Length: 302
Image (tube, rainbow, N blue to C red; front, side, top):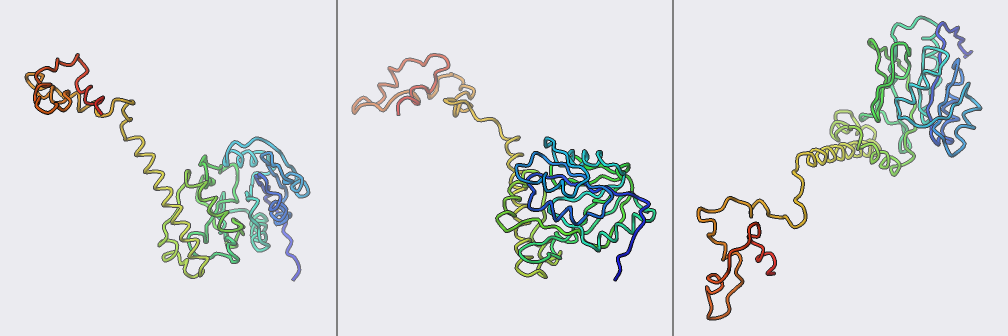
C-alpha cells in the first residue's frame, strides 16, 4: 500500500524533556521523524542522551531542572510552531497514530487540543485493562490555548475549551520490571494519588489481563495505601500537641489546683517509706517543700 502524503495546513513541533534517557530517546524520536520540528530539552544528563537526541532533533537545549510542568512549558515556548505534540522519552508514536495526526494537521483542527489513548507495555504484554487503559493523555494541543499545569507529578495540559479525542494509541514503555515499578511508586506516593484494587481489577477489567493485570491492580492499590498513610501522618503531625520538654512529663498533673488547705497529701508524696517502728514519723517531721518543688522527692527517690 503506497504511503499517504499529507500537505499540512498546521505545522507541528514535537517536544521531549529528558534526563538520562540514552536508551529510550532514539526510538522515541525516530517515531516522530515525520514532524516539522523536534525540540529536546535535557536536564544535564550524564549519559549520551543529548548526543543521541542531536541525531534526530532540530534543536537540543541543556538546562537546569525546574520541574515537569515548567520544563515542558519551556520546550513549547521554544517551538517555531503553535501546535505541539508532547511525548516522553519512554513513549512511541505508532504509524497509525502518526497518520491520524498528520491527517488532522492537513485540514483545520476542530478543537484546540486532543486527548490520545495510551497503552503500556508491562511484563511482556500490552495492558488493555485496569486504570492503565485507555489512559487518555492530552498531548496534542495549540500552545495559544493550553499550558502544562503546575502539578508536581502527573502533570497535564490545561486547555481553553473542550478537547477532541484521537483513536489510535500512544505506546508507553514505562517500567523494565516490578522493581522499577515499585521504585516509581515509592517516589510518587508523596506527591500524587492512585486508584483502588477493586476498581482496577474488577470494574476496570484487570482480570482480563491475567497475572499482569492482577499485579498492576495490586500495585495501584498499594500506591493508594501509601498515599493515604502519608496523608494521615501529615494531618496527625499538624493536630498533635508538641511533646513536653525533657524533665517536664506529667507537669499538668502536678500543676493541678491545690486543695483548700494547699497541703493535703503533700507529705505522703514526699516521704520515703518509714523504718520499722517509725511509721508516720517522716510525715510528721517532713518540712514543707519549697514553692514549685512539690513531688521532687518522689522523682528522686527511685
